[in-house]
Image 1 (cartoon, rainbow, N blue to C red):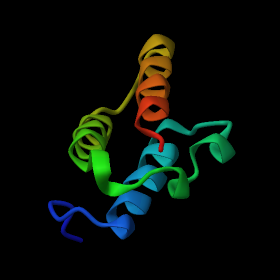
Image 2: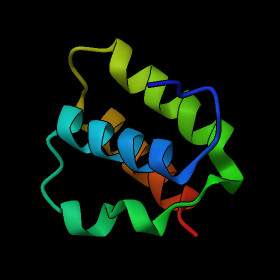
Image 3: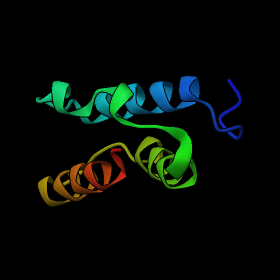
Length: 73
């Protein structure tokens, strides 16, 4: 999958991967249809950062959730 090209399919993939990696409890709050490709670069950056890490502190997880919330349309 080429995540360099902005597309709704890529947005959906990245959101699902982030939710899986973080084991987010309230996954309904982060549905992929709440995001579009207008802020694709920010979402891609966040996705890349999350995928590089193996563990997250509670405060890091909260910061990631806040950032995802700010990217919602």
